[in-house]
Image (tube, rainbow, N blue to C red; front, side, top):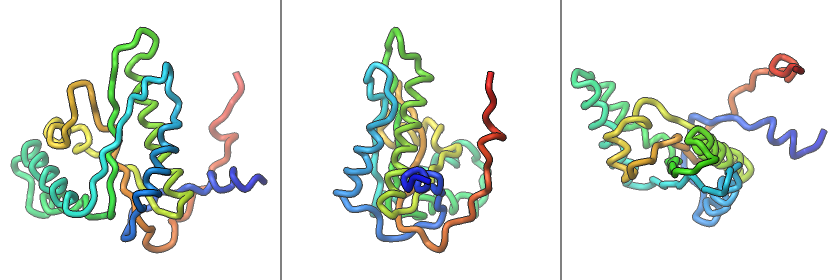
Length: 185
């Protein structure tokens, strides 16, 4: 079997990440891969926001604030979990969908293009030897979080890509058979 195909078949999310994260040069390479996402009419309906270092604590405070606005009765453990969530990786990339009016490219296609860009980041991280995981949750769709991260009207978060060095072995991948998911029409 082709080595490249075999590599792609083994991509696996890594929930446990530690230092080091990708260097600036590696991150630039990763974004170059992400920007090769399918993109009808070359709208480039995505942008990326990196969050690292102490800014992860600021993101944690923002997530906590948003949680309190959504759930005023949230318990301390849940609030602390929200505050600490961004500390699970040395680098987080918020993938942002940037919608624009276009007669041939509806918002759903633009959203899918941004999702493909996020997927490209996951593959690029793996290719460079890093672990990654795509996370969303209620915070990704929360207007308070979106405003706090500087999103403009007509933008939304496609996902948070957590990046770093994988801690421990990869989790086992389930055996999936293409025949279970593919049929002829």
